[in-house]
Structure formats: structure tokens, C-alpha cells
Amino acid sequence: KRNGRGVMHFVSGAEYDGEWVENERSGHGVMKYKDSSCYEGQWLRDLKHGYGCFQFASGAVYTGQWFEGKMHGQGTYTYADGQQYTGEFDRNLKSGFGSHKYVSEDQWDGVWVTDEPHGSGMFIFAQTGLRVESHFIIAGDPLPQPGKTNTATRTLRREDKLKIIGDGEDSAIAARSVADNAAQVSAEARKLTTKILDDTAKLLGLIEDE
Image (tube, rainbow, N blue to C red; front, side, top):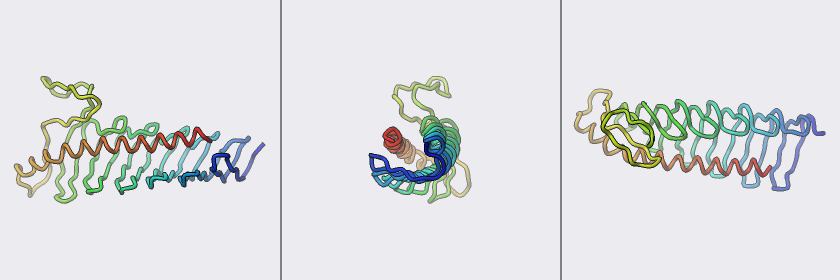
């Protein structure tokens, strides 16, 4: 049986260099995949478990906690285009409190549920420093205000009422700025959800192959 430190070459072209316990990857190790993606960190019973860094072939990088082969706990996911999410993950999905910084440097700080902004949070607009309290709901969830209807399917909606935080901005201009950015932010959130799910699917496929 493999115990201690050693190198194994897989038929798929992947290579593992690290610690073994009873023929299983356990301890610290580096796994290099055929597509140039790479994981370095802790393992337990052949699964990524503990703290580690996965560099995707796409250029995205996740650094943080893993649980039974999945991104789980506190971590940072940096997208290939420079966007970055830092916060809580639940089995590969952004869930809990987190901060997402977009390419524009605009930032959303708040709660996430199954990879989407949900509940109360705050947008911080980089160019103006404008801070906007906002509330997102996921289609199908109870609406926070009576009389509203929601016929969308798994899309994000933003409450009509927003609170503008800060001085030096004309309220009417600020309100228009928020309205103009709302649709763009929701579209970016949906696009980013698809991206991280695609990367996750590729990652899970690699794990199953090995």
C-alpha cells in the first residue's frame, strides 16, 4: 500500500505529488491535470479537504476552504477577467455573506444564496463612491412588500425602494444612476452564476475521472 510521500501518474495524464495514507491521497499534495489546471493543498481520503488553491485552465483561481472535494467555507474566487468574490461558499456555490468586486470596480457586499445575491446588501459604485442599500429576492421567494407579483423564473429582482447613502450627490441624479445600473448588475450576476457553475462542472468532472 502507498503510505508517505510519493508521485503517481494517472492514465488520464494527471499527476499527483504528495502524501498518501493507505493508498489514498491524504495530507498535503499537488495535483496537476492534463488541461493545465492544478490543485495544491490538503487532501483527505482522495478528496480535496481543508485549505487549498485550485487554478482552473480558464485562468480562474479559487483559494480557500474545501470539504469533501467541494469549495466549502471561507474562500476567494478570482475570475479570469479580474472579477473577484470573497466570502462564504456552500458546496461549490456562493452562499452566506460575501463581497463581489466587478471589472468596473463596483462592489456588492451582502448575502448570497445558491450563487445569487439575495436579501439586504450594499452596492458601492467605484467612480462616485455612491453607496446604495438594496435588497434582492430570488424568483419564487415571498416578496417583501404586499401587492407585488413575481412571474419570472430563477431571475433576480431588485426592490423599487432604495436608500442612498452619502453626501455630495444630487438625489435625482443618484436615483437615475441606481436605476440605470440595476439591470446591468442583475445581468452580470446571472452571467457570473453561469461562469462559476461551468468551472465547477469541469472541476467535478476532473475529480470523477481520477
